[in-house]
Image 1 (cartoon, rainbow, N blue to C red):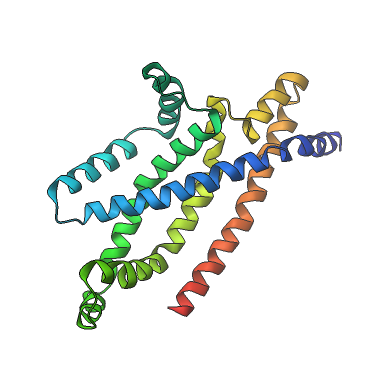
Image 2: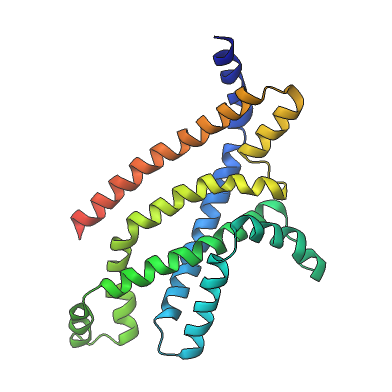
Length: 217
């Protein structure tokens, strides 16, 4: 009973870090969506240079750990005159990392749209570029909505990694509380439960949005 009481007592302090988590996840997701889509378009471009740059970007980011990327952005870039505050550095690191993975989601989704859709748009007088943005990409978003939602949930949990670059999110707050009270089990149990409380509703929302999007499609 004392364990439960002590664990519950930790929640108010941890809840104070939730806005930072949401700020990190939302900002990084916007960056990941934009950069991921541009990278996907570069991957299917007719220009070899663009394809090569996109492939290089994806392979480098997917081939190195997110934690190393965050550390590099926050601790290494200042040595060449690029100093970024903790939260923007976290958003940048998470956004770039997830952009590499989302680019593959977008690329597969775009290629999955039937060629007849583009041909129909062209027959109506659309230019290839207009057909891509007005017909193909909107349909590809419906296909990719589920994976995008799953990556967002994963990103919420990965915000814990930004604790190593001095972002005071849930895990960093838990570490500070643990150093002050030494209630290790209670504090980290509360942190785990809080991440679960954030993830489960998001999972349900993703399922509902995906069903709604498919029903409209």
